[in-house]
Each structure stands twice: as C-alpha cells, then as structure tokens.
Image (cartoon, rainbow, N blue to C red; front, side):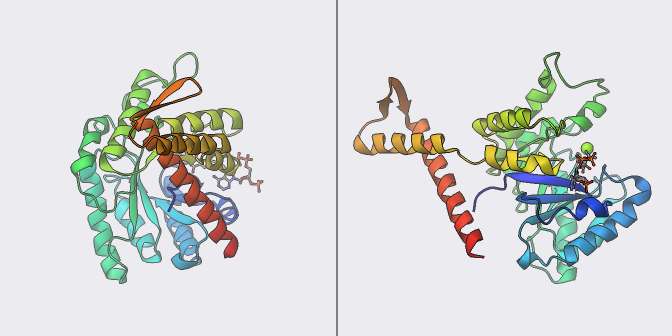
Length: 304
Ligand code: COA
Ligand code: MG
C-alpha cells in the first residue's frame, strides 16, 4: 500500500462539484460538511454526502471517500456522524482539534455508530487538522503516545490558526509562510513521524499556480510529507506526480543501494565525489519501496 498522495476537498452541498469526483484522479476526496458549507445548507449537505456514499459501496470505490465533519464544540458533529457513518466513509477529517483527546472523543462516537450500523469496528480512519487552534500546537507531541488506533495521519492548516491568533496575515513579504506557520508545519511533520503516521501537507490556495504547487509539493515530499490537500481538480495531477518518486530519483536510489551492496562492510560510500552514509541508504530503500509499490498499484489498476 502506498500512502495516499492527494486529498481533494469537495463542498458537500454542491451537486455540480460532487458530480466531478468520479474521474478526478485523486487518491481520496474529502466531502466537506464544515466551512465550505454555509450554516443554512448543513442539512442538505449531510443528505447529499450520505447519498453520494451510499451510491458508491466501499468495496467498489475506485478512490477513497472521506468526509470533513464540523468540529467538536460546534454542536454539529454528532448530526454529521449520524448521517454518514452507516454509509462507510473511508475516513473522517477532523478540523480544529486541540489535540489527541479530541480525536479520542470523535473515535468513541465512531465506535458507537459503527456498532449500531453493524460495521467492522475501527474501519473509519481519522485525519485531524492538528494546528487550527491556539492550543493545538502545544499538544502535537502527545500524538506519539496517544495510542489512537484510527489515526490515519496528521495535517495542518494556516487559515483557521491565523483567525485564532487574530492575525491579519500569515505570509512574509516574499510570499512564504510566516515563522509561526513554518513552525507549526514542522511540528506537524515531526509529530506525525513520532506517531508513526503520514504527514500531509496543507493546501496551495492559488489553484491556477501549477508551477508553485509542484515546487512546494516536491519540497514537502523531500522534507518527509507523503501527501497533500487539494481544493481544485486541476491540482490533483501535480500533487500525485510530486509525491511519487521521479525516474532520476529512482535511478539514483538504485545506484546508491548497489554501491552499498558492493561494499557490505562499509558505513559510507562515495558517488560522484560525494559522501553517502546509512541515513542516505535508508532513504534510498524507502524510495525504491515506494517506487515498487506504485508500479504494483498501477499494474493492478490496469488488471481491474
Ligand atoms: N471539486 C470538484 N469540482 C470542482 C472543484 C472541487 N473542489 N473545484 C472546482 N470544480 C469544478 C467547477 O465546478 C468547475 O466545473 P464546470 O467546468 O463544470 O463549471 C470546474 O471544476 C472548474 O472550476 P473553476 O471555474 O476553475 O473554479 P471555481 O471558481 O468554480 O471554484 C473554488 C473555485 C475554490 C470555489 C472551488 O475550487 C472549490 O469549491 N474548492 C473546494 C473548496 C473547499 O472545499 N474548501 C474547504 C477546504 S479549505
Ligand atoms: Mg478551515
């Protein structure tokens, strides 16, 4: 199984946009019940999202279908879950979490609703957006020991955090994330790896900027993120490609592995005048494993 690379948000109240999901190419879609849906449309969105899931039974889905519910404390979470758990979303995106305790609470709600619907306990995964409140960054490290069986990864968001901090902006003059946002992004990355789950990069809001999307996605993958949120179908290809090892990278990984195999007692090797040691070997093996898994998945997709 390769980690999910692209998660495309689709407003849960838009029949038109829901109609574009099937061929969108994303590894997962996130049908939104939260901020993309106005308060007056919440009920209608729940109904549409539930129908959408019911029409695509879990075993037959060509892509994963996740749902973003409203946050704990909104008074809307239970109604969201009551509408969707029985029709088996692959996962739930949980916004505005303060920390692992919030994920545990949502997980308990899922336990009850899965049992009521006669579903496999724990099948529904949870991806928290783990940096959207002022408290959240202080609890990121606690995910490592929280033993949350449903935890599918950690992702981060800047916009709600800015609002929580009464900020008027979250970018530096050159357009890059301001320090606070770079800090919580790095903390999310480390917290995810400490917890042994994928780190998912936040969205690129400028959906016509394919070049910027690809450059920042490749940079995120180089740092240890394995996937990214998307808000527009045009972003899916760039994300999928950026989070898949390229030919050059795969070829270099093979060269590095061969060089170490040729000198089984060596802790370091030199290639083209540069030193490589065990962490590089580990990275090369990860690249090879990811490449082989991707080949395997594309072959089995062709067989289907
Ligand atoms: N999912 C499915 N279809 C989408 C889509 C999405 N996220 N975003 C755009 N589309 C569709 C549009 O409906 C449009 O269809 P059409 O060609 O039949 O008219 C087509 O793709 C092209 O869209 P475009 O005109 O480029 O964008 P837009 O102005 O219609 O929409 C947004 C821009 C940002 C409103 C839209 O991309 C969107 O709703 N994104 C998701 C927002 C969201 O869920 N946010 C919550 C998480 S932060
Ligand atoms: Mg938000």
